[in-house]
Length: 96
Image (cartoon, rainbow, N blue to C red; front, side):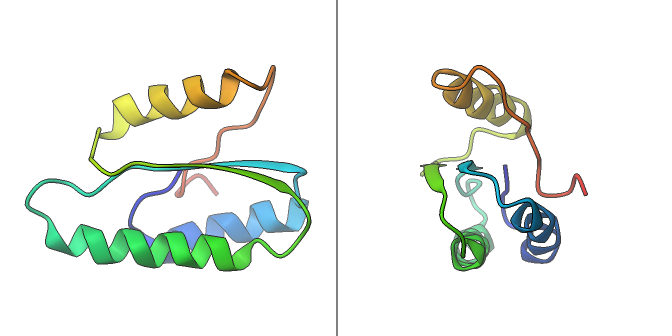
């Protein structure tokens, strides 16, 4: 899970990159209403993550067009992943 903070997202994803998981589920909430800077920051974060996937893996993406907020996004992203996986590790952009 990541949102708009490129620096912490990059640092966290670098740790994921070292592990080279065989499957990735990428979830990003959409821009907040009235926050035009979110659109550019979301795009920047997304492009950074996508550019860092440099190993063979199955990538699933759920990039939202609207903002659901922290708690709903946690539920949505986990429900989405566990519809196809029996287990997984959830890492948010600022966990590491």
